[in-house]
Length: 215
DNA sequence: CTCCAGGGGGCCA
DNA sequence: TGGCCCCATGGA
Image (cartoon, rainbow, N blue to C red):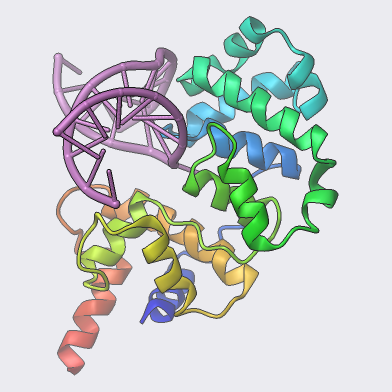
């Protein structure tokens, strides 16, 4: 059933080609900056970092904190996010960069990321999937909302890792599917599922109606 | 005016 | 563990 949802979304919306970024470090920066923040605001912050030549772990680490805060200000929560960007940049440099970290097992790398202040499960998994190309499914509020409305889970308050494992156990361990599925869920919820009541034009709702008629 | 974004940490029961 | 509150800007 999870795979059916994916196929319907893919046929309706087409490939989303996430994550929108020029390199792996930009993916990580975006993952931190987009915490509880609209992507349009994140784009402004990343643009600021980029045009001033600060979009690298070395430059962010040596950059004055107040200047860093002013550059990422449009993304909100700039005090904590500036600290989080510094912590992640320091971690990346001290651990030998992406190539070195890629040698860790998926589990070890995930636990390592989660040990960093400011990197929670969703941010860690976004980095694992979109910066390290690891087959880890990214769960978010949209994922819980959508699957709850489809009746695939009992509650929207389901535990993060519990839902992640359910999904990972029900779709092939294919990076492309993991990548597109999460992006498609976000796309679907932005266009149809954002509002409280389920939108009848939602392709997923249409799919459910179709299966209800067929029995 | 209110609501909410591609969350996470800290605190407390 | 689970529930709350805080963080902050900008678009709808």
